[in-house]
Structures are given as structure tokens and as C-alpha cells.
Amino acid sequence: MSKKLFIRTYGCQMNVYDSARMADVLAPLGYAPAQGLEDADLIILNTCHIREKASEKVYSELGRLRETKQERPGMLVAVAGCTAQAEGAEIVRRMPFVDVVVGPQAYHRLPELVARATRAGGAALDTDFPVESKFDHLPLVATPAGPSAFLTIQEGCDKFCTFCVVPYTRGAEFSRPAADIEREARMLVEGGAREITLLGQNVNAWHGAGEDGAAIGLGALARRLARIEGLARLRYTTSHPRDVDDALVAAHAEEPKLMPYLHLPVQSGADRVLEAMNRGHRAEDYLRIVERLRRARPDLALSSDFIVGFPGETEAEFEATLDLVRAVGFAGAFSFKFSARPGTPAAALSGQVAEEARDERLQRLQALLRDQAEAFNREVLGRVVPVLVEKPGRHPGQIVGRSPWLQSVHCHAPGAAIGETIDVRLLRLGPNSIAGEVAAPASGEAA
Image (tube, rainbow, N blue to C red):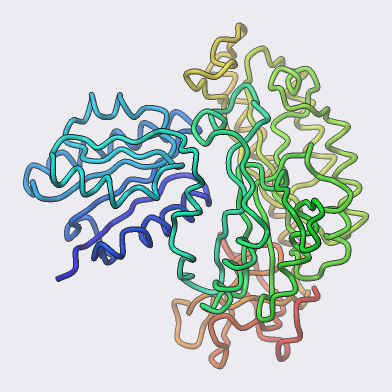
């Protein structure tokens, strides 16, 4: 009789990938997916630590699980991910019923940790940064859940932005070997994936050896993966402006499988704030990078990350961020109030901005970003674009898919198969998607 595993994932797409790999690691122990918490023998909370609220959510969820654990003492509870890495000892202290605490670099050891917790009782804790790469100990590949799949190629970060916990929770930058990435990508495609998103905390810092042994970067890796027969689309996230090199820009110009949507965080439009954040670039540098990318791929759409109310940020500096947003024109964005994370240099900076000012600035920024996103979506209305079919819609014969710019599109296409690319004329904007109609048989990926 198989045991049941339930994983609740918080945070970024890398955590989504990690959750799938944790399920793969535990499958040989007899763990099959559970429908929900109520029928699980092992519950894993795969956590995020980027913002304070993300950590609070984890402790709230653990508080609810305490009662479930009392009712079902044989059930195991594990906390994985970045909160586990940063606060492992605190989790054990505050939530002594937790059986396993494991950091994001050690989850390949989950079978051992689960066995230890089952055998000995008490929390099995592993938040080390192992010398060996976890990828060397994972099953060859995660089975794709649909036509779009994630593939982690890089982890950690050496940039040490003053507001960010990633270098402390994910460690130093590590790039997987190109051959291993290609092997996993091929297996994902053989399993039904038609679109692969390459993941990394700083994904365009990826570097490795090419087929001739010479050093290559993300641009060359994307070209190599694009040769895989059956792979229709490539994406990557998240990027750092300092690692956008000429080869990557050229890949956007010349490789049609590389989708014209790029998430490129800038955080602020004020040079003094960028320096205090240790971003290593100025606002003008960012604008020049955007200009180069758009020359290379005129239909490129951009999304970004923004932090408002960084310590010392003046009203004029916030206005500089709004000016940058107006200059670029974003198709989407993630924006947050500054959140002081313990242990980061920014947490100790003077000049903390008042909560009311942070709230007001965030509302103004988000209003501008919403207007830009709606304007971008309106610009594509009337166009015929290739849509990758991801799943059935809510109505008979309806499908839901993604445009090259990650827009959710739905239309009536009863003959379309999951994983197929169909041409759709975009007609109407909805609250969270675009309605369209099938325009013609599939004709590749040219938008």
C-alpha cells in the first residue's frame, strides 16, 4: 500500500521545480501524490524567505498543522526551502512537532531524513550546504505535469544585493553542466513538454563548457537547447541586468524558439538607491540594456521587480522610479514595499521610510504598472499569434493556452490537443485572460 505525499509550495518558480524533484526523490519510498492535507502521510511545506509575510505564512500554516498532527500522530510534517534554511533551529524550537527541516540544497537527502525521523523521533534537521551537488543525487528527470516545464540550470547568487536573503539561503552561484541540462531537457520533451523555462536565482549568470569544451553562457546554451526536436519554446527567469551580454542579446535576435518575454528586475530608478542596494548598475545602464534587447527583438516585452521605500528613499528618488517605468513600458511587474530581512545589510540601514509613505508610493507605482500592462494587452488585440495549448477550458470545446508573451488565452478549439500550437486571433480582454478565435492551422512560432 502506497503512502501519500502532499507538498504545499510557496514563492518562486524554482520552488515549484524543487517540489516536483522532492516528489521524485520520495517516490522510491512508496510516496504517491495525495489529493489534499487530509489524506497525506507526509506533508512538506516548501517555503520562501524573500519577504517577511512569506515566513509568517509558514508559521501560520504550521500552527494549523499542529492540530492535525495531534489527531494523526503517525503523519510526518516537513519544512523545506529557504525559510527552513534561514530559520531551521527556530522552527524546531517554536514547532517541536515538525519531523523534518531541510534546506534547498539538501533535499536530495529527504529519504534519509524521513527514515531518521520515523526511526528515532524528534526533528531531523539538515540545513548544510553540501559539498556535493544535489543534482548529482536526484533522479534523472521530473515528469512534466503538462506541456510547459521548469528546468533549474543555476542556483545561488554572488551579487549580494543588500536587501536580499538569497546568497544566505541558496548559497553561492552554481551552474549545472551543459550536458546535464541538455539531457534533462531532452527527457522533458520526450515526456511531453513543448515549452521549457530555464530557472535560476540569477539565471543569466549561468556559464559552462560547450560541446567543444570552450566556455559558453546562457545565449549559447539556449541555442543548443533550441536544437532539440519537439521543443517549441524556451524561456528563462530570473535575470540580472549585469549579466545581459552580447551573446544573450544576439540569441534573442536570432533564435525564434526563445520567447519575446523577459523578466529583468531593476528594483529602482534612482542611482543613489541602486548603489545602496548594491545592484552594480545605474538607471541609465538598465535603459541601455533594454534598448539593445529591443533592437535585437522588436516585439520583446519586459517585466520587472520593484522595491519602494528602500531606506533613505526620497520622494524625488521614488519619482525617478516612476520616470524609468514610463520610459521602458512594462508588460508586467512585481512590486513590493521594502521588507527588512534579518541578517541583510539593508535591515540595519538608517532612514527607514515610514509605513504610510511606503503604502502610498506602492499604490502609485502599481497603478502605473497596471495601466502599462493593460495597454500592452490592448496592443495585441486583433493580431494572430501562436498559442501553446496547455489545458481544457471551463466550457466544452474550449482550450486555455499561452501567447509568446505569457498572456493567458482562451478560445473555442475542440480539435486542438494539449501541447499543440495553434494560431489564434486575439479579440477581447478579460480580467485575467484574453479571448480569441482560431484563425488558421498551426504555423510554427513566428509571432
